[in-house]
Image (tube, rainbow, N blue to C red; front, side, top):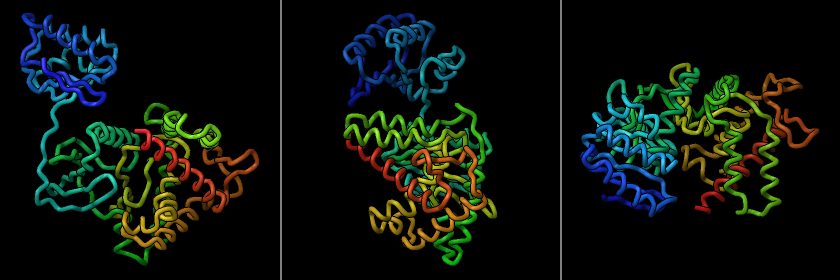
Length: 379
């Protein structure tokens, strides 16, 4: 039986037919390969598989029980997929059907962001084409988060299909009119503060949306997972300091986009709409504010010219946007703050004023930068 081994991934190519005549042999050959690669992530390549009898299903189930780990069946044809769905095997294995091709030759590019570019496929359909280094799993996660967010009432696109565009994956969605906030500011440089105020009010509405536990990922838990991966890579005192910063943040059930920046929000008439939903979840608003602060202020300090290269906006314009945004965001909070908005540096300091909030966001920007840099270095 043919198979491919790449790093920690084992791909076993299933034959055209698995039935009563060869199921036992197929099972034995699979187990021999698996036993030689016990720690590898296992995938079955099903592009050749045309017929799968009950004996074949039983053989795959036996492998799954002995393996006792997640197994992916990929490039599953429509007839085999029907069998898996009818027998409930789609709940036992991770099933991936072939990704259809999508030709974007001649399509109008209407948006470019950090993760990819958006093209108008036809009058009512757009295709977001992701960077080549983004995996199918990355794109599937974004599609899943987009659909879940939409069901929770979050203003985002209606998305419906993953496609393959040359060497990249893409997602088809409804057409959106208007511009990203970034593009709108470039076209309307005299409306920076006005747009920032609108953005702030939109963000506050997002942060007033309560998310039931389990409906979306817990952002605080995500940070803790990153910290766990960093343990031992930096000195213990610094690890404790970063860990305490995450733990000190109050637990909240508010919607968090996870990568909030002016490229990820579109102005559609009088409404704003979120894009790039792969990092969304629930947690404290500071996690979103940190992302916006980093994109407009923090990264520019470390890497002069970032704003111009990324957004096509001068750093001064980005700072103007940030100041107007944060002033409006914390406006009307008064002298006290609801528990959902509380963030502590220490037992006595409650962050209400703009300067203190900026101090906290700077700490969180440094935290996230250090987390991601250390994890990237450990690959």
